Length: 150
Image 1 (tube, rainbow, N blue to C red):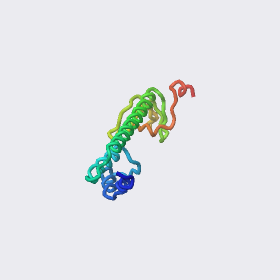
Image 2: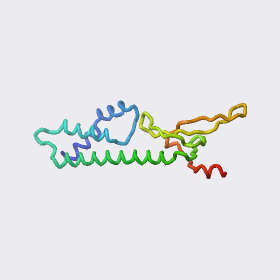
Image 3: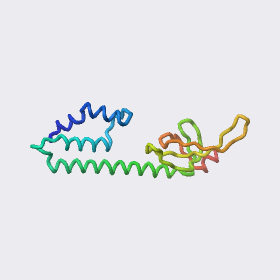
Image 4: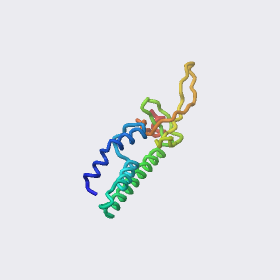
């Protein structure tokens, strides 16, 4: 299969509309699902008289495997980073500071941190409360010893 036919699959308007409507967002980067979709469409629409070479197919499968491994490594690194924040005081993008007590994974796959902090009420009393934030919302990290000395 030539490079021209591959690029025509990438710009196929029916694929673009299917991709954007199925995800509900307009993400411009290709992910592993997009790569697998393109590979299966390539196989589906290949010329039976001139099928894809074995080496091309194996190379594309190797690329897919490498993409999958990089994605898994990235997710693992993000989870490890979040786990390392347990017990630390973090400040989020809304300037709420609290101690990370838990790490959860959201339904959309994002890493969520549970912050425990004291909130001042209107009558002047403080109440222990928690807040769940995304890892990407963390703006500052302090060790508990450093935070209490300031």
